[in-house]
Length: 209
Image (tube, rainbow, N blue to C red; front, side, top):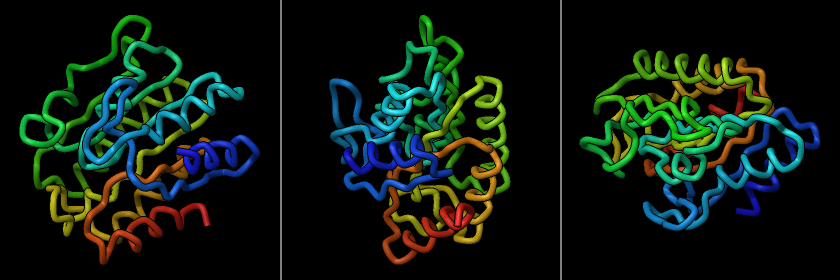
């Protein structure tokens, strides 16, 4: 959690981007529950730190294979943090009970939650189209900073997931995130193809190198 807060502070101090190489991951942890290996929500803590120190609006983009149900629950009724997630369809994938497209926020947060569930087997072309939808929505929201829940379990070789992104695709992901033009905190989430996860993460980060 402190790693994620340090990354957020680095961005507040002027870095274009900072990567929190955090373990365990966090996006399945809510304010009053834990799950999916997650106990403290690193991405949510980073987003709140940015809000506490001058960023009027923050966007959280979750690109882990599994829906960031904890992050959604934390910000669901707030208008100052936009949450978007591209993930495996919760009708068949963990966490099952959240992540459907009709979950759009409540109260003051109505319209500030965007779920883009994708079927098992989704490849980069369709996945990248969902990414464009998410980034366009974040642009309309007017976010001052971006927090990315950087799950690497969208990889074709991941043993517990079902998307088919390749290592080269993560180069494209990184460049597209950079072109969003926002100060960016990247918080490491899932990724279980242990031989390739480092290469894939570095490919995303190379966009800012």
